Image 1 (spheres, rainbow, N blue to C red):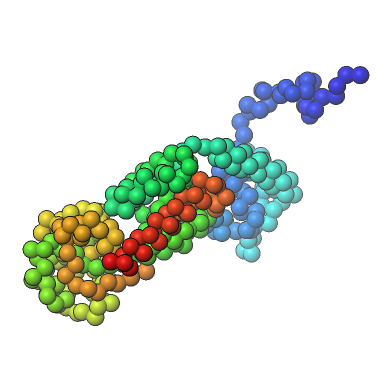
Image 2 (cartoon, rainbow, N blue to C red):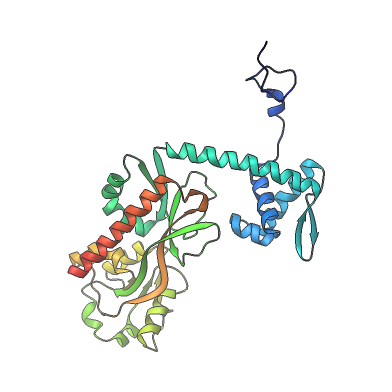
Length: 320
């Protein structure tokens, strides 16, 4: 008796596939993701938040899906979205297909040899790179690749990026956020300027250096210290904290930032802190990654080693 074929397509032997049918034009995976999310939440807005996309993008992707299949997938009303019969059928298939692809991704990631981390420029130079060897040693042979950026947005549109260190509040839809440390603000300047800054009110006549537009850091510190009459508009604005600290070290004014990002300059005396008041501004540094990556062993190892290094920093500062 001949072996029965397991191929569901008539006319093809077991273990072979109708290639011509597999190569036909199919809807995009991003469209299927948008459809599944919208079906789950019954809302384009909630689906967009979960996918870190705009509502307009999700709406267009679903419209393209409906155009591809030539039928409506949702009934739209003021109360939200309801699946049509065709939509219910497609959702079952889409969940199966996407589930299999996610499982395959996890299987491949388990054997991946590289982990790509994006981090802010100043954080990379002043905190990450001095600890890079310790991090790589702890990753058990996994190669850590670092991409620097001045953008504080946790944007995972680049599929090659596995995790991003972000300065912010830690609340980003669709992402896991692991707190590294809270940001602390303190003024810093070159030693030559320190004698002219005996009182906080002396900042009225100083040039304030800003690590970004808007003056948020200086405004926060001034408000918390209860000092009025300081014009934060008398300023020099830079696009990174690293440039701000370099300008301060060169004597161009008084910078504001987290002393962790200037530890080597403070230790060498290149910069000094003229005032003792340190203020938390509500921002912090987080390791972020998509929720689908939460079970990745590489991500877990990275989060663990970064957390241990932060705790070591705290312990060393307490002993000084």
